[in-house]
Amino acid sequence: MSVEVVKLNVGGKAYEVAKSTLSKHPNTLLAKLVDDQWRPSQAESIFIDANGDLFEYVLDFYRRGTPVHVPHNISKAQLQKEFSYFNIDMPEDKIAISKVPFAEVSRIRNGKMIQLQEEAEHAMNSLSRETDFFS
Image 1 (cartoon, rainbow, N blue to C red):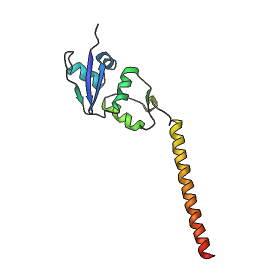
Image 2 (image 1 turned 120 degrees about the vertical axis):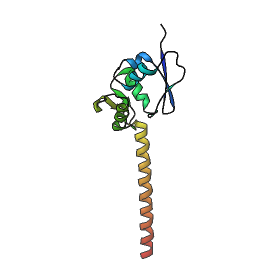
Image 3 (image 1 turned 60 degrees about the vertical axis):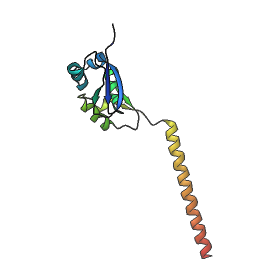
Image 4 (image 1 turned 180 degrees about the vertical axis):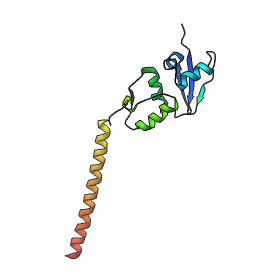
């Protein structure tokens, strides 16, 4: 038995997904769209005017259910808005935001330390010049 593959163009990004994956959630926009408009012989992509970058998380929901795991730089509100567009009820507690990676925390901390050190040196130099001026 061959898998029926649906081609999607979401905000300019190409995606391919099994029709059976979309059919798992029959009340959603994509399931209805595929049932109503898509044909197995269809070669062209179905265009969806949505955020192509966030769509990968929508597709993860279709494939794996909840919780949906996303990186720390994506807000729950932003993602919920995208899920709502696709007629998917996604409670906030079903979105798992990853923690900031240690390397990034370390990079930010080191950058802040360097900035503070430079500010302290600048303040000390200014103080030194003022002391010399008044001496």
